[in-house]
Image 1 (tube, rainbow, N blue to C red):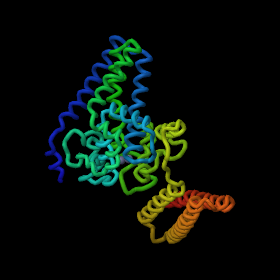
Image 2: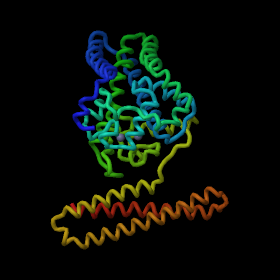
Image 3: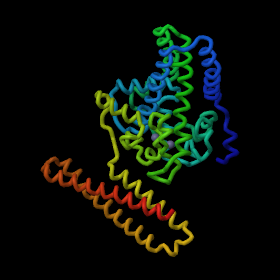
Image 4: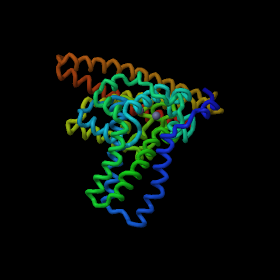
Length: 379
Ligand SMILES: [Zn+2]
Ligand SMILES: [Zn+2]
């Protein structure tokens, strides 16, 4: 399909009217009611709470649980995600996850990635939903195991009813409780929906355009702490595209990722289990690999590269050290996993294995700092 074929795609009037009218009415009615009547603290509190319930249902539920299976959840938690995710009006889990799995598989492919960032900010943010593009057609063969989940299948069958009931029912009930029905319908209903839409869409647009690429430069996904702040932690998108089966996106403990904290909270409450995370060494390895590639490219760009033989030699030395550390780690880890499986190895042997693994991890950290100095010399 060429760019002229893209412009021939027919308009999707349902999504166009939904996104257009909700934004327009919110822009006019929310300030009008604020000026004419005023909002109470409770109205704003419910706006924030429902926004968080929607946002976390999309990030922890639709995304990390259903689309990527980075952990497992008890039915009560699944139901919460399915109800409040439907309220976010981003289609059923089945449609959402089918599109998202294709996005990961064909990232940046202008023909197949449904929200390909290479087709521009507007397209990846919202444009992909406003026309009937072939790349946007959900491929349900990618979500067979989700189709077999009775709760997910139920949400897909009754999506529209659930979505409408939640969008009108929840703000209405909150309004009856606070005594300000219209205030709640406007803030927890309308404004919440518009904000919730665009903060999620930032993950497909901003997080593929602005930020750093510490783990891989093979795709457009970026790590961006500001986007993470807006998207319940999903802004660490370069990490996510590299390690999509990890339940975290902000992998460091200090990185703002409320979705990771919420999943941990659910684990503590007994509602989530089997959380998957990538070993620290593999994460460091990806960072170093990227640093090496960057350093080599910087060296090639230098006009005086012919005279930089000593730097080239040091880099080759570092790379050799890196590869042997990776090999040693892989072997040790295999031994360690085997000893865990057999459960016969004595604790002494296992603690030795563990401390050698940690030593290798530390060595990789030191190497990363040396490489950073080397890169600084290359300018
Ligand atoms: Zn992405
Ligand atoms: Zn993903």
